[in-house]
Image (cartoon, rainbow, N blue to C red; front, side):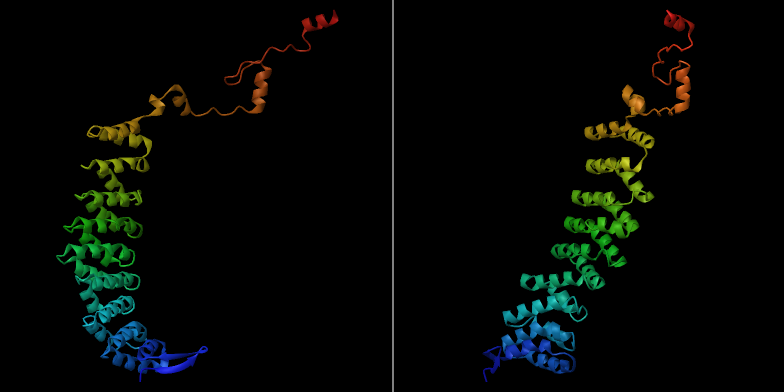
Length: 354
């Protein structure tokens, strides 16, 4: 029988076995066991299109009952038919975030595949898994970072950004391990997590940044500098990290740390530190920057700049000002009041009489 004819929505439709298999995902509750049994039969079908349809609904049926389903997924990843293999890879990608233990070995195998059509869905599944089970992702990253293939280590290290906020100590250990990797790109990927880590675990971030700031790769050092800028400068270890950076052998590291000095130090202390750094600094631009920091306007400035540092005089009360004016005295820097003759002045009276 080629199919089952049904009348639906004003039309006649022919439903095939493929349609029936695809509908298994809709069976819930008391029908779940029958859906599971039917799916197992579909997974071992001789027809490739039936196996493909079964793989498409496998993650949905597995939510009700998963016995043996992921064993079949593992088998069909190596199916003779390319359509089935492709469907199995997509099924693995979809199932990974929800069933990490069920697909663990299959996922590990596919991540290492040299065939992009197989490895790329696995990597997408692993990335999606960071949202649900970050500690499981850490286990996979841990294994991948131990491999000799730098391509796999690079891809694994990129996922560190996705787990750094939620993986806890496991994530920190992986970042530390990746910062020691022989491959520059792996270390760069690891160093990109430091800014984010500094917001959640500042003390751990400082420890890792102290290592990254000494890295031979410029991009790793730049990522470390960005992390330093995001740190709390009131932390004594962060302050020491910045102060030590002002004497770093790399000019860009020195520049960034010197630029942060005004945020760390009060003016008097800043001038002292800048003066000390000038004695060893060789870069002309940085020497100019440090020289500007040593400038004290209250001593070396113009008259107007010096006056700006003088405290303003206290205002003279109105009553005292009035008394002073009545006595012909000047108040502050103002001119003395003009002499105003009194009404009982005898000379004034004589002029009036005449």
